[in-house]
Image (cartoon, rainbow, N blue to C red; front, side, top):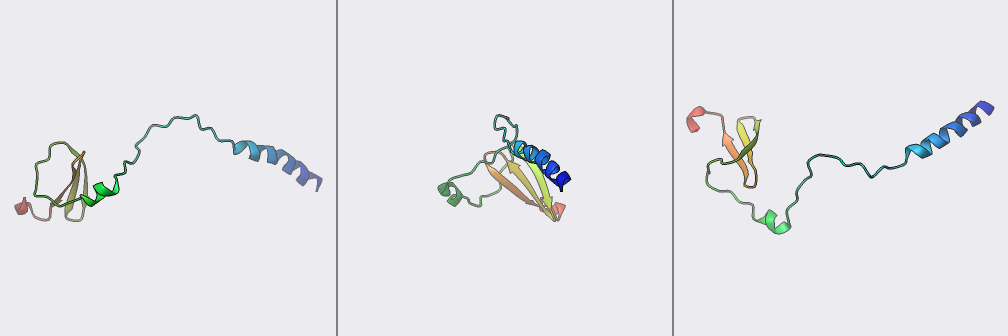
Length: 84
């Protein structure tokens, strides 16, 4: 019993000190950009356009998605080379 009290007495300060937050750290990384409700309602489907500033490419099945900064997403069917 005496050993348990000593263990608790040593562990309690460590638990209290480990909860201290350090909010002064600056972290590099990406942050999401959210649009307003009006901007979300203006999303539309347009005719094919040339890619000017292409970004990352994702492939899912027979569909290729390419992000274009500030413009949107290009969606291409890659199931047959004749369609391109």
